[in-house]
Amino acid sequence: MGISRRDTLAIGIGGLASASIGRAAAAAPAGRALIVSTWDFGAAANAAAYARFKATGSLIDAVEAGAQVPEADASNHSVGYGGYPDRDGHVTLDAIIMDDRGHVGAVAALEDVLHPISVARRVMEKTPHTMLVGEGARQFAIAEGFDRTKLLTPEAEAGWREWLKTAKYQPVANSENQRGSALDHDTIGIVACGPDGRLAGACTTSGMAFKLRGRVGDSPQAGCGLMVEPGVGAATATGVGEEVTRIVGTARITNSMRMGLTPGAACREAVEHIAKLRGNAVKDAQVGFLAIDRNGRVGAFAHLPGFTYAVTDTEGRTTIHAAQSLKGPSGAKN
Image (tube, rainbow, N blue to C red; front, side, top):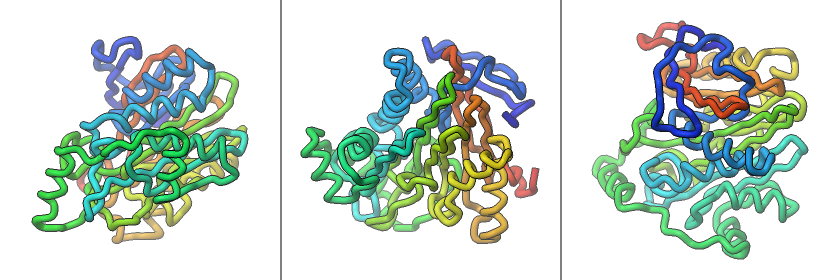
């Protein structure tokens, strides 16, 4: 898994309160990985995904249930309800869901709906399309019975009004782990591989805080924020979406895995390509990738240190890992 000698936080799915500190070996956690997701808050998403998988045996059900957790968490300002708005004060949501049979559904710039991941699944299952955007996505959601929900919470609105005093937009690396900060932005990506090698994935976000109205990042785009490749593996992305989109990052990773690279090596290759392509333009930008292959092996890699991810094995044990990165704390390669 490329994370030996890293500290991990072991979290039991049956009770997140019973956490203990341990050392992560290369094969950790014990058992084949089942569900992996981005950032520390992915642990709660994995718990919901694991419970749903055990109940239904469906990976699509599992990743949808996992994505719904941060979508409904008002304290998480990077996803869904409570997410920071665009610079005009509108909370707009993006989401995508995929399986390994070529099914994909996505929504972008969706407003007033609590669970964009579930709307994306309806797009996948009930339309001939792969993506709906803006007002059309909202109309479709309402027609499908989704309730209208005010997504801008008082806390998020206060953060936006404070930002308006300077109106300075600058993405901050790893702000997803700075919970409660007005700098929170970005996404949760969750990918899963069943014991039989079947694959599915989901990605959902409220996008970068205070973005230009109409901005859509990598998250809802197949091959950018998420890719599921039958018989190969699945990958998801986090960080500055524009940089992921420039190289079609997750499609690149699954293609590298198809050609024989491990998940960790494939993620690293994508990050190195961004760094070489963009040079000084990305010196302070975070981009992270997370992947799982058909054998349940997991890998991750980031441009800057600080990217974390949650891994849940087939027995329900979850660990939080710090991804290796291209640049160390001092800016030197590590």
